[in-house]
Image (cartoon, rainbow, N blue to C red; front, side, top):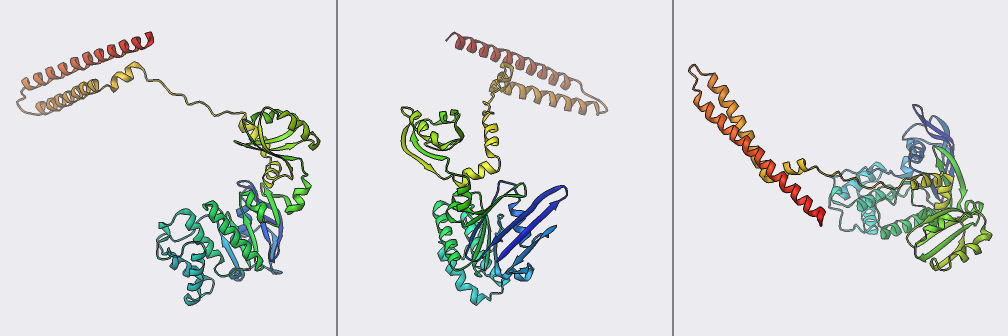
Length: 394
């Protein structure tokens, strides 16, 4: 179905994709994984010929990939690309027309999928009136309406609540049973773990892990222990024979250096935790992901830097005095009198026969306002000092 060999894409001095190879067959769910910025989206866009690769080979059904093949492919981009002012049904019919469907063909399909995704009565509404989760459902409809042979989904579970994640999961599994090849990129490891046959994990543009999910888990052994408990499990990080400890509120996933020391671990928990479950399991895809991309070091470095306490800067007595209503009122009176005196003085001196008596009166008023301001400020400051002294004695 889809074969990619030694794909490479470089931007200026940044190599976004470097030597990625993968193969996806009909009726297969394939997981394309990687941390943020690993090159997953660039890989997808290059495979789809949205951007041109610098080198590498891409074939679809044994032929070089061309734009003419797009009608056999469904694509859900990570970014939403819907016309916000358009009605939902009109949006679906427009995108269906781009895939060669006439309105009379597309309309029953559109309403089928709207009902399937719980949007049966929403077709008349504008896209912008929908929640983010429901907008994601509309984009999913656009990607599967034409029954593609190959379906590529970039973060398909974004914005979906747990119920709708199950709904999407059921639809994807149904499409797989109908021989559709599905590639999806996601950060939700539990979805990949439950659904995918094969995976490719890329980091910094390079493939670092690929193959059948079952074989990959087998390769990483069974040195993992899952605990469910009541109590504080932070002390689990202190054991020398625990290589990695992911501690949550009442759950922990531990990776031991030697699984034979599991009995020692169990004995050491006596009296410290109220255990509900102690299970030796194969490592989860989440723990494999963290190990392969160097997550433990990053997590440890982050843990070494505790969240700094908020430093509240105390206001000085002078600052508090200036915030007092009485002081502010006296200040505004002084400013008003000063501005009026200045303006009137300029006006008087512009006259042929200036009258100086009004200037004298306004100047006197300004001086009185200044005296009042400083007296009020002094009085309020003394009140703050007295109050602070009383509080210290208490």
